[in-house]
Image (tube, rainbow, N blue to C red):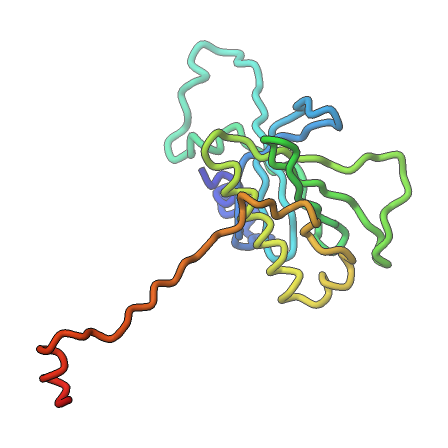
Length: 191
């Protein structure tokens, strides 16, 4: 699963940073139509993108790999590395979809004025999309809190007012037990 981590360790030792979180996401347009799947990873300083690059085989024995080559990363490439200081994250939900919006910003904290639209990524998977969405939110928030240069540059909180819905709230009930009233416990206490 940790394909970006493997590629960084195998091919990019000079820029290696441990990943905080890594999972597959789909780049979607404003209508929710998938454009491309990326394996995305977050470090303390960068947002990384990787994807599979499939080349049409020219020989019949192309499925044979040289000894020692990892099958998970043979067709996997590191596509892009973006520094976090120029990014703004926004996490939200639309119905049953868990989304992350990534905008490029100028060092002053203002959005870049170009015709480029923000990148919208949908967390996929039937079981784990909510888990990954919450994990990404927590890691982005902790990076902002722990590193002051990102707190000022990103400008806005990674959480919007629509992030927490009623189903997200965890209700905890504490049970308070009274002191035992049995004579055995009273006798042992010397009462």
